[in-house]
Image 1 (spheres, rainbow over the protein chains, first blue to last red):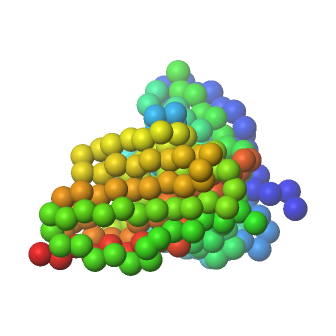
Image 2 (cartoon, rainbow over the protein chains, first blue to last red):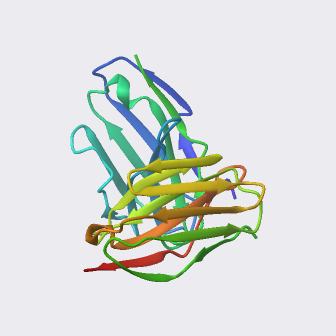
Length: 114
Length: 108
């Protein structure tokens, strides 16, 4: 079991560019979560999918952020027109069924927007 | 395995009163986070603590890694505080374990 896989591990973009982050959940897990982590805020929930369907995207910034799960083996988080305040570690987690099951996190993608 | 015991499972408060929620951990946790899930299902981030205490308005949270617990105190409860509260503890590595939640109902 490779655990949750996230790519890339590090990404540096210029202000205004687009960033796409990839997540491969643990095989057999039906729930995928996206979080943003900063030193100040800790983990901030962004969105989550269950059985590939978006369940709750209330944590997603309304502009520039979007997430998809086209199949059960991967999810993407896309940030358009990146801004310096988007710099953070973006974490993907998967769980067997949903919110109250243990979530297993990937190593994160460290995004730096210059 | 790593477990989080959250209590109480349900809590009823009258407006203006207060109480505390507690999470006990079976192992040493690196950090704890408290969330509130409102009636629309949204997860609201309340506190993130690696140690000590934090206060925000009528809410105050404490985390003692050595003693393996965290608390969330609510004072002067308001109707809009109603919802389900979760603690989530970070173990070493990339694992977060959620408590089972506390359903809070604040009534007039």
